[in-house]
Length: 171
Image (cartoon, rainbow, N blue to C red; front, side, top):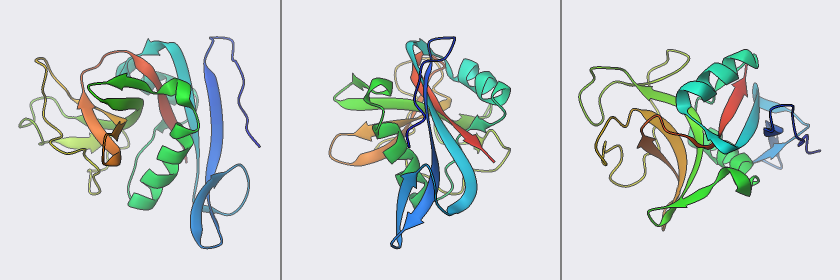
């Protein structure tokens, strides 16, 4: 069942577990976890920066989501797409919630030094075409989901600006 609801700070959350049903990955609130983790999409209608989302995820007892496989990307993307209020149009695409990827300060632009908040190196990637690109002036050193026109579920690098939400992972 959906655990959506308004919280005291006007965030809206949905929690799902990664499961398998009939051999096909599904996001659901019950069943056998494939990685023993839970995911929560947190929507902030007035926006949240990556830095704020990172701190908030830790206060919630988790961390910004780490994506280590196509299967995990599919499931987290499905969870996020179930919340249309976390997405917004930008440059012909749909920008989605923050994930736990970031580029270490001083790294070679645009693709050097990307890591996860857990300290893991980024071995699996799902960059949208032409990303990361550090376009638009200023640093683009944070990672969020993007529904890239013609491609679908992907990642984009972005500056530490306010977007509509983030995905928390609980180990």
